[in-house]
Image (tube, rainbow, N blue to C red):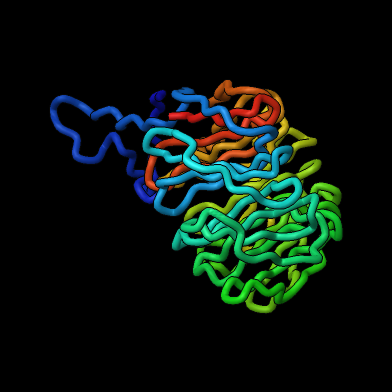
Amino acid sequence: MVLIGLRVPPALLAGCIAIAGCGSDSTGPSAPEPVTYPDSVVDVIPVQDVPQGICLLASGEYAYVSCSYDNVVCCIRTSDNMILDQIEVAGIPMGLAALPGGDYLYVACFGDNSVLVVDLELGQAVDVVPFVSQPVELVVSPDGDYVYVCFWGSDQVGVIRTADNVLEDVVDVGEGPVGLDISPDGSLLYVACEGSDGIWQIDTSTNTVFHVTYVGLEPCDVAFSPLGAHAYVTNRGSRDLYVMDTGNGHVEEVIEAGYPLYEAEFLQGGRFLYAGTSEGVVVVLDTWEHEVVAAVAVDSWPVSLATMPGADRVYVCNTYENTVSVIE
């Protein structure tokens, strides 16, 4: 863990009131309380070949890792980081997404052109959504009613109704959709299309694209801030991160990262954003200060990661080392 200075919230600066002047006494102003963030690898978990996707249940009790070459999903118990089970799935599993209740896991099977539905209590696939084109990544709506899937092979996003696992709608987007995220209120879906260098913005009430924002080179993922006011776009080709205002879809700022950025997720509290790279490190961004504060060394090709709900912990897939690093 490292310590950094706490940024003064903008509200405290209103009327030119500095934090040093609030409640001061004869001893002078007190120092800002330091803030910590995870920056050390505390465990490395061996898994099966080529871990490509990872997600944690909302409870934080279990992490699931897709291992593409062995066509299995590994279940990790987070209390001791032990592998409890290996669930057989279809060809080349990639992205994973669990329903809020923790009962079902959706698996994007790139090689099999399908999305599998896994009953986590049974530990096996119980349904399949067929005839989709090379699915790579998924996200679940906050209410759990829909799963949205990037179809890399057809430049589309599929909308799966979880009540009956029917593909309800398909939305055309840009070339090469590889990452997506949904706003905290479920009204907006942002899709990163690496072949078009843009973010396609979808109104989930109508499943229609209403705006496209062009960003850096080869955007790989997008992450909404916890309150939904901003979206953070990771760019692999231009090695930077774009900050978007979700109210108007415009780019507010570009932050140089120095690394090709891939999947990104917020840590609890919403201040720190963790992003995977292809250069053996995980980048940590302080979204209050708008700067990169750390590059945590892990193993080879750590492009996928997941933050643990309710805890300062990050799980990272090291694709070419067949391991998962745990950062605290």
